[in-house]
Length: 271
Image (cartoon, one colour):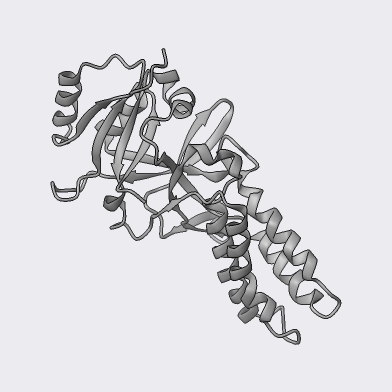
């Protein structure tokens, strides 16, 4: 992976991101392709079904019940490895009037609650990783107390790995996007005694925004703590229809603490 990943956005979002020094990591259940989170799940269910016999039925059935119950708490921010992709300008940057913010991938590695991952499009590799994740389950003894806490804990570790794979996998038809993701997987526990939800390993409080009739949960990822040796933003690519004046955008960036950012223009002839 290169050291820059690009976040395509409109001018309003760009202004807010720079001034607040904040990215929003939103729930995977609110992605543009709602089937995305089920892409790996369907492959996992199919593989277990293929291997289920009367001898291992109890083991696999118990695992599947836990898998269905433990919905992934996955929150992501999307980027692209491509700095000047026409499809991204059209879809995410106000038809080319916006910008692509070039973030430094190294900067986010210091945050242990965030993972940076290239999206996996290769179905053969996805299947290979599913096999590796499920192998301990396949090898687990057939005669065991499958209702025990020990087995539940064993299954939860496997389910967490599956959920992470789900968060970084897509259909190969989307390969042109060259997507990179920041992935956050906080622990959210319902406490029936206090009638509240408890959050652990979260980067911020959970916030909500209303969009097109939906209520979308998200977490805020701050990038306000940095020095010149490891700055979060390295360059800005102006879209093919963008009207920014270079000096004015440099002043705006400098006023918000980002003096060393390169300004580039899209090479696309798209108008």
